[in-house]
Length: 229
Ligand code: SF4
Image (tube, rainbow, N blue to C red; front, top):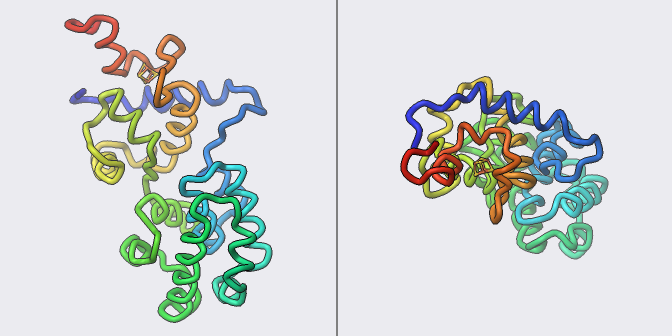
């Protein structure tokens, strides 16, 4: 693992790469798309992020849009019948579980938080079906707070490149909170998700086309297993 990681150079390289992509390039990360579409409305961000888990971006956006049109706040969500909510959420992955969780969340928000989504990590993590990625996203997008969203792409690229060593995304987030400069916290997710989808893919990373190869331990080891040159 690298003891010193040049985050400025890495983020700069990734942003230059992203800015050079064709305008209609596919693969915009769902986190960014959701945030852009639903702005700073905390319920919309929370609902759509819950819907996005293990679901493709297009499906997430369609299902979230259908649900939010009928239920723009927790109170109206609880007025939907379970059948109707499930119909609107289909075909999002695990849509029945997600709807059940959202019903519980909406009830808690109304009963314990006067209808307002709480703006702190611990309260968000106590909600059914809400993990650190979702909680971070709500804090960042709805409340303009600092957070780091770590999903499978962020976790994989960081470990593969040798910027840190962790077993799970939550551990990656904890390490990044210590080593990643604050100015990059909100930006790192969108960059690494896109890069993880298009270049540093789970299987068959395109190392020949990588713009940050010089900062990657995996690439150095591939070039020369001993010296890394
Ligand atoms: S060199 Fe290969 S493994 Fe390293 S970051 Fe680039 S694509 Fe990923």
